[in-house]
Amino acid sequence: MYYCIWRTQTENDKLDKQRKPRIHQYRLPLEEEWAYVATQPKSLIVNTKSVEDLPGPSKCNKPNIWGLYNLEGNVSEWTASYIKHGNLSDTEKENKQYVVRGGSWRNNNGADARIIADQSEKAANIGFRIVRTCLSGR
Image (cartoon, rainbow, N blue to C red; front, side, top):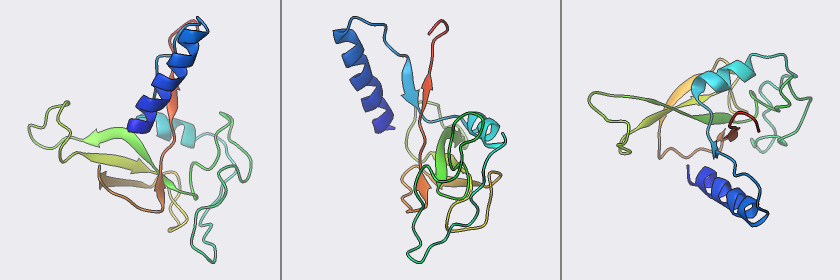
């Protein structure tokens, strides 16, 4: 995801100027990481359909124990996990299908919702959440 690459580079450029250690990277979470934090106690938003059929504010209700908001019921979220078909190598980008997790304002699905979408899929009810990989000792 280009946003993650840009965010990593921008933050590392600032840290370089301040002569501070670089971060490792920003990225999309793996499906397993997303599912782990989504199963923690939370304040749930389910089916927040509004008159305009739009997602709600990103910090509505209370966060879960990890400080994360809206893991279900607002927008479904892309993960870095993809479905491998046939002999597709890890480095090939064409025709990849990625796992999208969580329910959105368009449906009644909860955190267990899982769909497979082409990497070029665009939908008003699918968004993304980034994570930062930390090196030990930081």
